[in-house]
Image 1 (cartoon, rainbow, N blue to C red):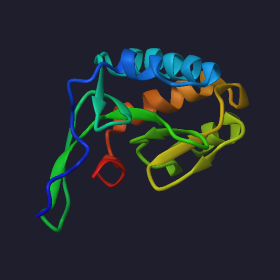
Image 2: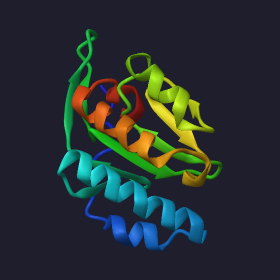
Image 3: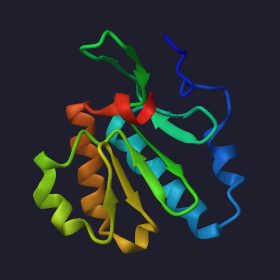
Image 4: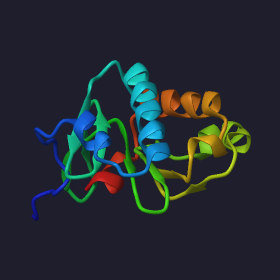
Length: 141
């Protein structure tokens, strides 16, 4: 079985964020960091070179594949902020309708800027995801 690339590193999340060229993205990342720290009670940790993660979730698939991933996390990607380990979206459909401009993947939420969404709704989505701790493996493996 191949070794997972996405695992905790010793890189400082604050240094990683400070190195982001775009000031608005840096500001959004600092806001996300505060939201996720509050929701998990865990400090931020770099997972791989570009994911700021919070907490640790161990997953095991029916295939036997297993690993660890953050309970929640985010990454400032070129076109959007990727918010990871959202435990699916069906259970939070009413909140998703109120979120604002976004896209979704299997366990990822994509937002261009925090100003495009209702941050109180986003905070609730993160809290709900943390409570359910599911769906992380695909995003982080």
